[in-house]
Amino acid sequence: ENLEKKYDILKSYFRYWAYQSIGNFRLYKAFWKEYNNAIEPLEKYFKSNFNFDKGSNIYYTSNALNEFLNWAVGETKIYKDISPLAKIMSNKNYSVSYIQDFIFSNNPSQDDLTIALQAALLNQREKEILELLIRFGARIDEGYESVIFYALENYENTNFLIQNGANVNQANAFGKTPLFYAIEFNRLDIIKLLLDNGANVNQKYINNNEKLALSANIGSNTPYFITFCALEHTSKNVLMHAAAYGNVEILKLLISKGANFNAVDDLGFNALDFALAAGKKENADYLKSLGLKANENLFYGDSLE
Image 1 (cartoon, helix red, strand yellow):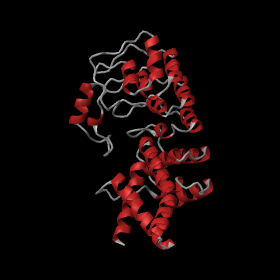
Image 2 (image 1 turned 180 degrees about the vertical axis):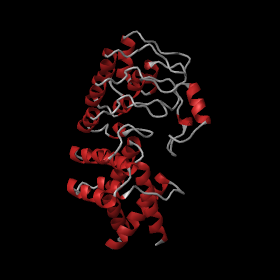
Image 3 (image 1 turned 45 degrees about the vertical axis):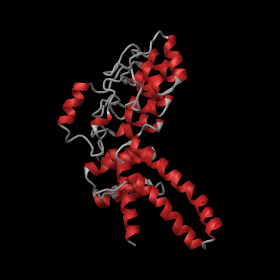
Image 4 (image 1 turned 90 degrees about the vertical axis):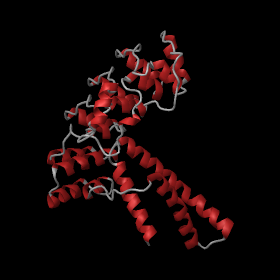
């Protein structure tokens, strides 16, 4: 029973962590997909190797998989979960009228409504729900990452937020704007949408001096799971990011929109160096064709961030 309680706490905290950013949410979804895919093969394994009855199969399977949960989430002192309203957003069985009744009955704060809007966007809920939350007071351009960041796997919802005044150049503490994420997700349609609505094609991560200042003064606007130590490539620009995460089509689009392909980050990496470090041969060949040269003095370590 204690073990069961422990896993429930881990699952709740994992969900809470997932809803803090779109990057976290993608990892969370990928984990549960693998977890669920492993249930049937594991049950078969226990049945054929140990001849357990069905109840025992389920017991040993869930214990084995929960060890992976334990390993993925680790020990936590944070006993938190998402709010009841955010939970409603994650369940597509709840209708717009149900959500409206819930809001009338519970009178959630503006912060709760904004967090619910983030949850609705992560779960790619329909426009009527987004409109409802905004009408009741959810804020569009506040937070470490504003709500547009949470929409970046859904073209319609990203466009809806832009039409409602979302700032396409909103940057998080690292200087990362929605355009960086759309490139990471290889969403050419959303990259075009952002650029057509004024996204800065030459946006950069913060520089090293800004990083040092922020690290010394880590505070109010930075979530608990963010560490500036993770940022090595200060002053990395959009094109460098695309060289590491995108494809030639994305690179061509960015350059056609005025991306500076001669820029270097604070470690001396140019876009070609990023393509080579990421093992993106086609990107590297294309960037070489533009006349870029690799910096021979660089060591391509693990991090592209």
